[in-house]
Image (cartoon, rainbow, N blue to C red; front, top):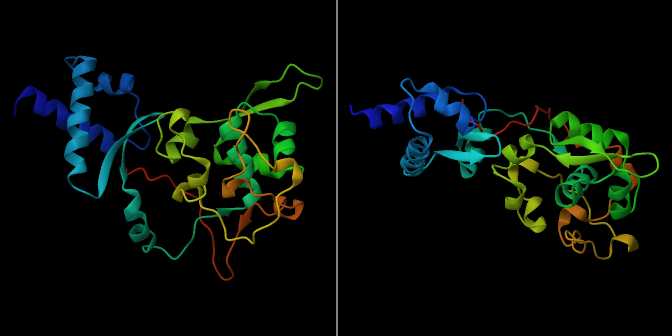
Length: 237
């Protein structure tokens, strides 16, 4: 086995064994003698192409680094291994997440102005506990409200490398990592007539249909007779 082939097998083994995405600067540390960073990049590209041919598992670069994960289209088969369902977040939670993701950094007051209803503390706590949003500072206005932004874990769960790769809002509802419950269509509040991502367009997506305050109290929707398990990322360990 030549040196490059051996290095590629080392990369493959390290990435398969890792429980978290590995950044490039950590990956290069596994080689002794050292392998140039550019060579490691090329080997990662070769591995990506090799696994793409296999059709079930892929090597992907996300915000935190590189990882192996099952393909999205295979998730339905994996789900059949257990009757338990991951939690489905309420529309109020998903609206809040979408607004923060596309308008970040955003204060609670700014989210409330867009949604047209109050945002309960439980909603923000649920997103923080899930690791999807975090406080990154405070706005220099009276009261110094907290500024919320999404995290690398949020991008990892969507298999994205950066915020520039966020899907159109209309596609966000359908993403398997951010599954929404079935809820009746509700009227749009007047304040939400047109909302922008730049500043003008956050409402065409179903994630930003107006929600009532009763939905704010329902962080999760659980079908009758079913139990919930914590949501998991598609990483292959």
